Length: 555
Image (tube, rainbow, N blue to C red; front, side, top):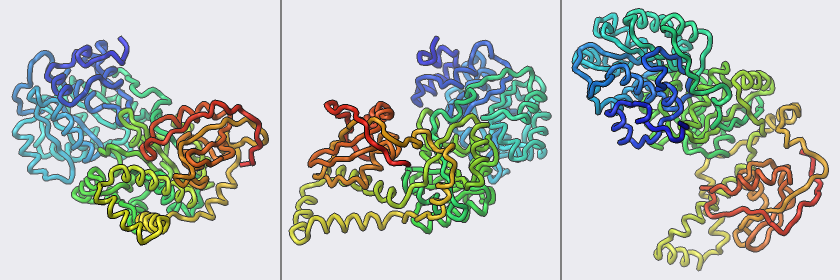
């Protein structure tokens, strides 16, 4: 049976869980859910490699039900937990507890969380009242074990979520104590985005002939993520980040820094510049961390600046852009960081800032991670202004169609005493004043010129004559068409470089332009996709024009 036709019923998922999944709108299992529920793996210990956002929490929820419920219609009362789930961070543990609570709730499953930063006495009372599944962080679980608040003697299943991150965070001693306190005949399932040697050693020691499940095959970890690199001058890294955020204009962005001090400084600096930014690091209290995450989820903040430790395991839906302001320390960290975007089948973008001295290290890291990235210049002030004009024009076009009679009358009175151009200029000035200022990057421009041509995009090396195809966009002089903002728009819409756009001819109601013939097919396919920033604006090939040789300037 092919994956697209697979259903939860065909995976022999417990009826109570199928009802819960139906209520949440889960129609088909994701690859990791399908793979771990394969009949030949029933009851076996598992070592699962699965990227973030693949649906792995539901996956191990299905496994827990398989091990704990069997054919029983619902859970029976118990004073000792039947399953334990260990997660690396407080945020992830709470997220997993909430997810398992609704998934197992129809079957009467009670799920309790135990995490650092919360009231340990309240957790002890919840454990004493009885729980079928306990979800917690390694330190707090070990603390409850030592205080005799947690009895693992009845444990049938144990899940380690994001095992590689727990080892990276220094939880080996706590994990060892917990695993040795659990019954030897339990079922153990280990989920890990990557499988470095320490994880394999842990699995070998604490699992019984674990089956390997590669739910994210090598090379697919960044399948839904576009990776871009920018070479920046060391002293202009912060300014380059400002321009990246301004140019991309994401609804939600996640910026990674190497240190707590760097994260705090960057968050404060972005806030002072006008960005809606918050910071999160390991030295914050649980209340401060929760508040920062809530601001991002509620939309009151658009940029979260974080360290590696604090950002792991966070429940951050809708991250459109990840920026590695400081380089990740290794390929695993690169995967973890970038994996915060492009989740659950959605497309995402990850950008890394590298000094000339760091570029070769970054290239090696990308190769080891099986990822490919394109090196591009940092967005300039001119390009950002052009994109601003493009966005403002789109907003005006959208809002103009929604104007009421009263608003139109007020606008008419306004134009009776003032020239339309001066009114538009005033509105443009006001909109620009609300946006953080873009930065000039003279040192970065010089650093980029020093990048060897071997790392530039292959298409950018073109020089000399080549063929070009004519296209049209239904924006002309009547809508203030200008090459200054049209050129960045065309590059973005068609995913081409400036060197692949040729002559631009502006007419009253349309603009015609050339695209390099070898890039025309890809440009046409990309440009036909709907664009929320310019709704209703079409780009089409001009059929009557034939390809002709043109001279291209050297990039």
